[in-house]
Every structure is written in C-alpha cells, then in structure tokens.
Length: 424
Image 1 (tube, rainbow, N blue to C red):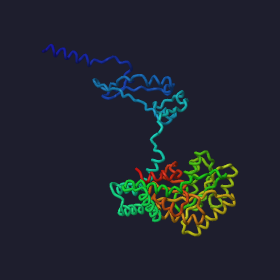
Image 2 (tube, rainbow, N blue to C red):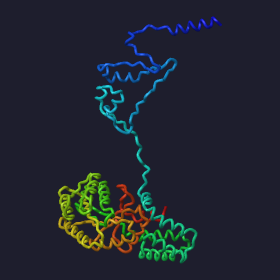
Image 3 (tube, rainbow, N blue to C red):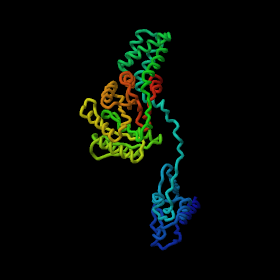
Image 4 (cartoon, rainbow, N blue to C red):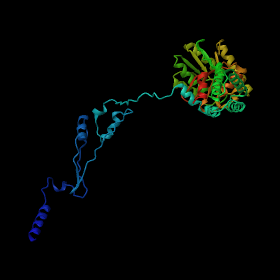
C-alpha cells in the first residue's frame, strides 16, 4: 500500500513540473479556464486573393481545446446559394469575414434560374366560364336538378319552374317566352319525363340568347373607333385595359383616349393600363372629354393606329344633363371622323340584375348602342339577365367578363353561356 502512495505522489509531482516556455513570460497570455489563444493579423496580411480564400475555407478546422479533458467539435458553416434570384458578388463579400477580395469582386453577377415547369393546369375558357357563373348556376342549375329529378311534367312543375326563372333575374317577358316554348316542345315531342323537360329548357334558353352572339368586326375602318359608356362603377376603364390586351394579341395597334375627365384618378388608372399593355394613352390634366377624344382620333390617324378605345365618365340615365354631354361626345367624334364612332359599347355590371335592362334602354335611346360588355358575372347570381335583354332590347353582347384577370374578358358565345348556366 505504501508503494502505491509513493508512485501516486511521483506521478503527481511529474505532472506539476513546469514545461519549457517557447516565448518570454511577459508575452504569454495568462492561463484561464475558457481562454482560447488568439492570433493577431496585420492589416497587410488581411488582403487575400480569391485563390487564397477558397483553400482557406475548404481546409478542415482542428478541434478547439478550451479546458483539459474537454474537446468542442468545430461548427461547419454551409453557404446557402440563392436559386431564384441574382446576387452580385459584392453582396457576398461580407460573408467571407470582411476580407478584401479584388478578384472575387471583379466577377459579374451570377444568375441561377430554377427550371419552373409551364402551368398547364389553368382551366380552359369553358371551365372558367362555368366557374364565373357558379353563383348563377347555384341559383338556377342546382334548383333545376332538384326540380326535375324523378318527377312527371304537370302544372305544378311549370309553376315551380316559373318561380326559379324569375328569381334568377330572367325577367317576366323572357320567363313567359321560355315557358310557352317548352310547353310547345313537350306537346310536339310527346315528352313525359322531367329530365327531358330540362333539356328542352336549355335548348329554348340557348335559342333565345343566340341573336345576341355577334362578334365585333374591327376591320371595317382604320382607325376603328370604339366609344365606351356606362354608369359609375360598371367597369369601363378596366374593360378598356382588357380589350386593349385582347386586340394586341390579334396584332392590332391600339390607342387609349382618357375621356373620363370627371372621376378622380380615372386618367391615372387608364395610364397604368396603357403602361401595362405598352400602348399609347392620350390624356389631359383637365378639360373637356370630347376634346380629349378628338385629339386621340387625330393622333391615331397620324400614327397608323388600328383601334381607338375611348373612355367616358360614368353617369346615371336619370342625370339628363350628363346624358346630353355624352351625346355631345358622339357628335365631336363624328367631326373628327364622319364614319365614327364605329362601335358604341355599353358596359353593364351584372350585379344590377333587371336594372341593367333599364340602362340598356336609356343609353340605347340616347346614343344608339351597337354592343354590350357584361362584366362581373363571377360575383353575381343574376346571370339570367341576358335572357331579359335578349327578349326586350336585343343589343348584341360583344364581350362578357367572368373574373379579374386580364384574359377573363372574352367574346360572348350563346351555347357556352347556356352550357355554363345549366350544367355542372
């Protein structure tokens, strides 16, 4: 036992023996429990080339000893390279420890583009039309499904059908016409099942609105002048921007006339659409709407423009002085071009329902409308108003809008519209 203690004391004394110092005592840092030796680098040595930086980063870092018997593994930092945008090399320099790397900073920006597959999932126009008319179809189509399922054709069925059509803003005259027509079809074809009556109703509805399907032909004049009118908030300015894109895709040169000099920011809104589509906008800080459109027509003729889209201020049909003003705009256009305006479009908000029919009558009496643009069909259950227009004032529906995207304004198709209303 005594021998064991002697060996232990000898080893302890040996461990406590001082080791030779490699530097003068005054230059050796004082020992401490968690002190890591530091290295002082002169300013001249801080400048490194890109070739020197790379191996310095790639070399393995040795473990750091902080206390006897305690080893802390080094932390490995991985640089994250952006994959969806460009970053100049100068922006990456601070991540290298604020080192001056002239060779690295001289490199141009590097762009790494991700391979994003084309979006083939965007629905076709008919599907988008069905989506846009979903509220109307909920009001009409789903009720039709419940009404016609497993029933016989009788007077009670006709009465329920009449109620559904009226609540869908089809209108009294159009509803009466549809009921009389399907009664005739039932008698001629000897129909006795309610499901057959549903098909007869869809055919009758399609035939009723078919006369409204007349695509606009802009090849009859150059420039072709399209004047847009409507009540406040119907979507005239937005429709102009979408029409500009639609005709641009057909290879037409388009010019916009900011004729709405009344509404605040209307001019700026149209200018924004012009910048978005890359088309010229004729506008004035203030002034007469007719004068702006007059200048736009002359500018279009001088620049070889194909289509002029002329905006006008919104007005209610009951504001007689404003209705007289828009008549003046039409007369001034005719002074600039005796054959114009070649198209007078009334922009209708489908949310107004049967009130849209009264707007058509008032503006048609004042201007002689040649076409309609029905907007916001995706936000209403009153899509049946087109049937009311077809029955009482059949002005052609040139375009319909079923969304906010720039390509959600398309030419009207009676068959597609009927299909979207009646079928899921």
